[in-house]
Length: 172
Image (cartoon, rainbow, N blue to C red; front, side, top):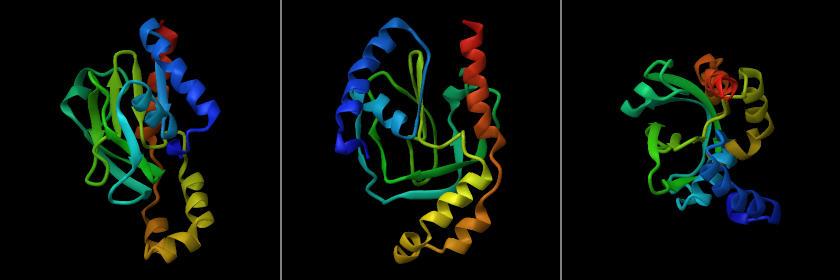
């Protein structure tokens, strides 16, 4: 959890502003998304509505129309998530790119850096494994593990965020 503030995390947090100033492309995923926001002056912490877990839809916002990571994606698509903490307030100058009813800040851009709360690197099998591993905790929270498992699908559009980022790097 970002709020635990371990020394290695503080070191990375202190390094991120120099990346932003240098114009080096940066992609933060989940913890990295939150760390990017915090390093740039946003606010992170436990989500007031609790954790988001499983495969959920996100909706892209109009700024995605010209965004190199998101412009080729459909307006709504499923993503894999597992997080209790979130970006509660975007950093100054950040552009909100995607959200859903639970998490308004699923993706943002700040100059040459992007943060995504969801996991574009997960496959459906990986998400199922996370659900199975946490099944007893989920059940004790009143969450239907069967419903979570039934909702898991592959997320090729989310995975394209990684491909698009790689193309951005390659083009530099």
